[in-house]
Amino acid sequence: MALDEIKQVKLDKLNKLRNSNKDPYPAVSARTHTIKEALEGFDEFADKKTDLVLVGRVLSVREHGGSVFADLVDGTARIQLYFKKDILGDKDFDFFMGTVDIGDFIEAGGFLFKTKRGEQSLEIKNYKMLAKSLMPLPEKWHGLQDVEERYRKRYLDVIFNEDLKNKLIARSMIIEHLRQYLLANKFMEVETPILQTLPGGANAKPFKTHLDTLDLDLYLRIAPELYLKRLLVAGFERVFELGRVFRNEGMDREHNPEFTMLEFYSAYWDHEKMMEFVEKMLLHVTKEWFGKSSFNYQEKEIKFEKSFSRISFNDLFKQYSGLDYDSTDGEELAEKAKELGIQINKSMTKGNLGDEIYKKVARPNIIEPTFVINHPLEISPLAKKLSDDQDHVARFQLIVGGMEVVNGFSELNDPVDQRGRFEEQEKNAKRGDQEAQRLDEDFIEALEYGMPPAAGVGIGIDRLIALFTDSHSVREIIGFPLMKPKVSGK
Image (cartoon, rainbow, N blue to C red; front, side, top):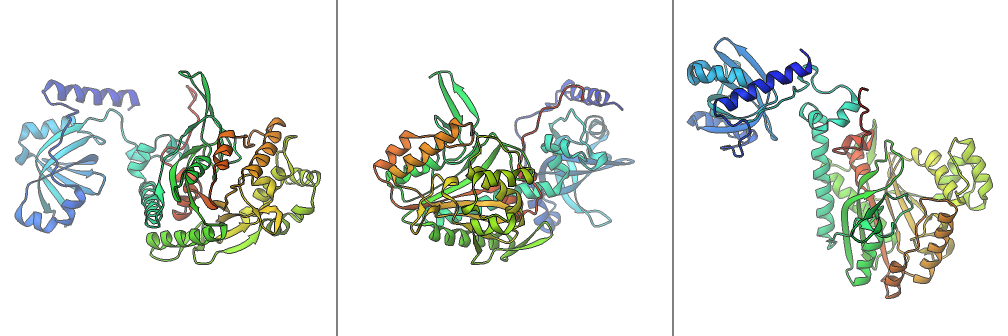
């Protein structure tokens, strides 16, 4: 039967409900228990023949003469329903058969019992439609098989895809573990602007919009960093924010244009103390979630044990590219980038080229948790210089499973130095670098009032959840990843 014909049959059933003065979309339900609660108390409820009212979506209907078995699912579990004609009466039983479809939400009242096969079931005394579905579920194919369609119709995919459902649940729980760990360590959760007059806090191309009321161009934030540092200036010593950030960049297994970032800052810490804290936090969350300090990712065992390995950016760069970054000029790096198939343009600086080469040949090879440290100054405009090496900064990136999961550093709090770094970034922007950071006069003025020594960290939540759930792509653990709209007729 064609989809339009199926939908018309369902519309006819909808009209049948309305013509019988039965609201197909009532506002309330008389639910007494979740299905999980009913199953957990099954023996007591069954012995006492307690009247229960369960609700949920009908996922299957099986007719056997004067009886019907149906599977009901709510957000907690699944149970079998047993509709019997001589209990409901001919009229109500026939009305059920003539109006209820797979996909409908119903309210089912009755008592618990076990079938001859020992299956825990609810014998129905009465029922009510809660929401009539007008489109058929893809139950014949056990859910959506087309990968693109799965991403487009997540609401259907979750119904049949237990793995996806569990990943989204895991996402929520792991984020809660992270939040509770920070709160337990005296970090205060805050909120900072998503619409900003200047995009800052990362080297990334922003999304631009316009506020009509003030006739003002605005940007969706690429990071909350500069506002969180303003709070350090204000006197808050430990702050964090968990929220969405937006970058107008590529889409692949590690990137989505909008993603979730956790950033936190502590006054009077340096990058060394922050690395220790990150190790402890991730080990804590790993043990809370897995019950041990290791987990599997893409057929490899990942061990989150203290302490993580460390390697300098230049040593790693030399190991996998064959070049010494510090002594190599931009032209040589450009030639190496071309050789590796990296797309380059005239606006790219030595730092840009080196970073792209590092991402291409070095980072994918780091599987076990490893801190990459001592990055070049030119690719770290917000980080404090090393005290004994003015060409490198007190920065670290945690790489796990070939992905950058954490980025942190000792924060630059010298307003004169920060202005100079921003001015260099402005030069890059004028050469066409759309990811260059902009000169933020308001932030520099805040630094001029004094910001205490501090360390900060950004954690890519989507990548971390992908690791913990053994997901190949961050799209697998994002509820609704961005999709290009379908072209009509294709």
